[in-house]
Image 1 (spheres, rainbow, N blue to C red):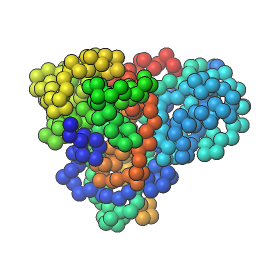
Image 2 (spheres, rainbow, N blue to C red):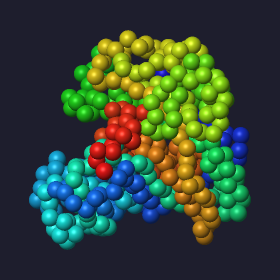
Image 3 (tube, helix red, strand yellow):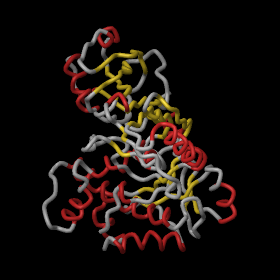
Image 4 (spheres, helix red, strand yellow):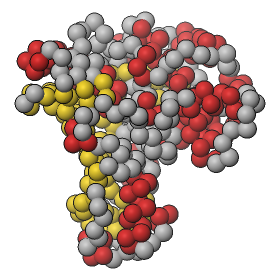
Length: 379
């Protein structure tokens, strides 16, 4: 199957001159602030800890917190994963732990920001999105010219969004999880024993196929255009529906609704007409069919994913010899996918893969899997 990882896919802004430069020259150049779906109420048996971490994955941070407080890691809840090679803030919940003990906790590489009580355990998906503050250095054409190019691209990205590709983190440390999944599922090897790793590998294959579908749509100039039979959705929590050409003409240009693409599986909603034909073409190119996903059953239930993601609060400013990018993304979207529209590469040679994150597990995709009402009971 052709390569459909992040670097090979067409950019929305491919007709505009790229900025270039390097992202993540140091951890301080990549800052992420988690935006919770709800705020803790101040009472209850769970203690919510908001903290800043450096040079550690979320699973490692949870292990260190459990060790420091002498509790089980399984009693710690979290909404999503955060990268190791960054400065990140996030929240975890701790069951039946005195807030004063949490406030007094000292862990190298971690800083306690706030401690508050709440009624329920924090769970995967209880996350609205993330705020990013990214610095791009080593600008090939200097700050002034690079800023002008960046702002031209930002005008398009801020108005119309970017293709909602899966980033390199989705495909494993060596980028070959999708290929490994195909080998295992075709009987060439026995595959991983761990059920979670099996699902992670299958999700990489689903993501590769989604990227192939989306790349073709971008290449054909159809990211914002109606295709007969489209299943569309309104925003990150909308349910997909069969949109008409008339409605698409009103809703696609404003970003109020977007086409959705396939995360193939036995329970996935299917489009009709020309839109279905485009999805069948992706499977044919990969020498797969829908029966393949029916056979693997619960490992690939399937869902729909938005074709584009809107980038909120986007700004680009000069800061010394660097450019500073600020923006907000909904849960499930990748900052590196936004930055590739600017032609910016990451200095991190190996992606940090945090198995089980909301960005890396098909059953945890927030876009079309839950609604605001689903989370209201936790507030």
